[in-house]
Image (cartoon, rainbow, N blue to C red; front, side, top):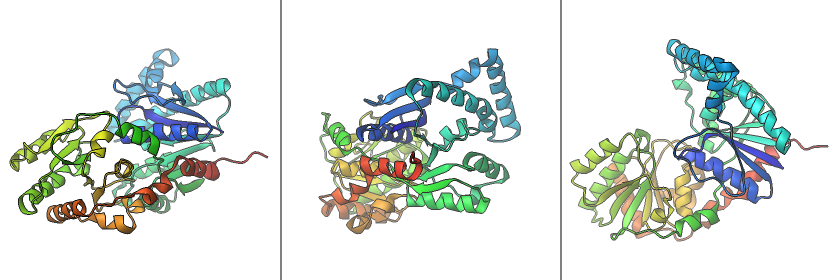
Length: 387
């Protein structure tokens, strides 16, 4: 089976990391796996081993296409975006979709036709939206809310999803897409729920890399410093637990982003500078997670919650605040008691409770996320058997 996974770029990010993991999963299951990315960036994730890598450089190709007319079309697209809000992808995609189709055709002449072509993330769909092919599968990673769709956004949704094969990565994402599809009457080819793979062996190997472990035992969290991650709630709950529940562990938050200043101000306001640490973006966070006493997630929305699954692979127990999305797909049975309301006192009590009674074995919670199960689900749902 010849499979291509397509993503907008290989910049550091959760969706990009999952695209790499999926391409590696197909390779490890014995398929010829290719990873196509559209844009070059200064900071890239490490290239996957044994996967054929292809840079299509669509934005650069657009600028240089048709004796410079492509660059003119880019400017026109930007101007139209000012007049019609958030429409840039509609106009730029007309040309980039054509360029993608041309580059894909050229690649298939070299390596042979693909049986399956999987696109990760809405930003990737947008760049090639005019192109249709029954082999294409669009993987939707995010929750969609129909009450937030205005007239233009409804049009955009129809452009992106009409007559497509769609995958949702969790029950929450699946439900939200179905609601949008039904309310907007969008005809699609097929919709399936297929989650993300976790390469347990690779994650454990990364977790075993040597680091200078902080002297004091600690709780850890990780993610973009963005309002949706709700790190101030975690810091406030931590402060409450230190003051009222005799918590002695430090708190480490791995990541970087636009909310760093606000997070630092919250730490200073609560006089926690000596015990709450922000080491920044860490290329390999898994050793930090492995050596932690607990991983805590406070996101307001999580499409799936991959970092929780990865924490369990590292052998670290987890706590999460209740949120729409996918965490309840795997936080079942005893692990369901590790979900709590997004309230600082309730979260503080849950953290101390789980620290006193941790789960020791996460094997059963990770079984649905194997390479074999995920790759087979894609093939069974979307590859037409040849007679």
